[in-house]
Image (cartoon, rainbow, N blue to C red; front, side, top):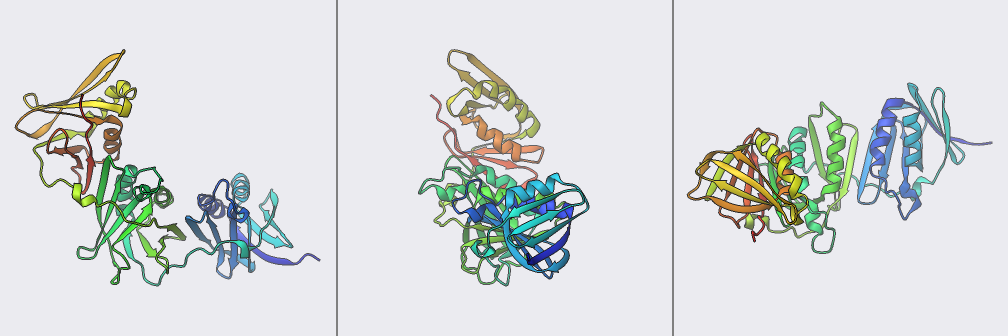
Length: 386
């Protein structure tokens, strides 16, 4: 006699979507077999799916018609692929003996299992949130900051692969910063219910996992706000919205002292239409991409209120593109150069029609701003001109 241990009926679309979400937290080649599995935890409220790679974990709750409670783990990839490929309105999950049967109207699959006791425990949230943030503010901030983070995971550099969350109690805001040694993005966002007792004022969150939170949250078109918690031992940050809890292991500090490099004044400023600059970048990039560091000359012509982007490739030739600028404030022309890819990156993350450019001089950190978003600033280091 095979003992029926757990059973539930679920909405097919709900289950397929939720399995896709949890699959994002599964490592491709984990060193512990249970980490390639998803935990199915059926209680009186429905099904909770959990997956983790030990640095990032996802819990998703799905309502369902519960016949029997229980929990077990099965292959995350195979159950997700099977449910996505099958059709029907409902799905039935049953654990009989050591096999999980997943059944739709026309399809059925059996899965081998690993006991739930081998599955790592995901962090529990503390009772009160660290802060709440509007989903729109969070998405905008992540979009403008993550791209500046480093991908270098070596010792001493790993902090730069994370986004700094700097908690400012005085102004009820969080300052988000991303940097990689050549560029820096910073955006301030107003938050609600910033915790009275802050365990720390600086948290470093791995950028690659924040990008996953952003992807999933963007599926929820009507999402109003995101609650942010710390785990009880303060080693993980947890994002909670709708039926999802997303936990990420924090990077230990210290974070680079970014405030020291923020300029306090400018000798050259102008405004430029984003579309015009994008067109010029597209043209000059045909040559610049063949240069080490995408090196591109960047010259302000004061008399004609224009900037000229120019790229020279030895043995090939050179090309250039001129862009008109407005609101120019400068005493002389400016001759500097940048990594064109880095300019392209910031321009593509600016949503307004107009960019503001500021710098103290040809070798100083230069500032790019989005005229439609006063909370954002991007710094870019120039390259030396030969």
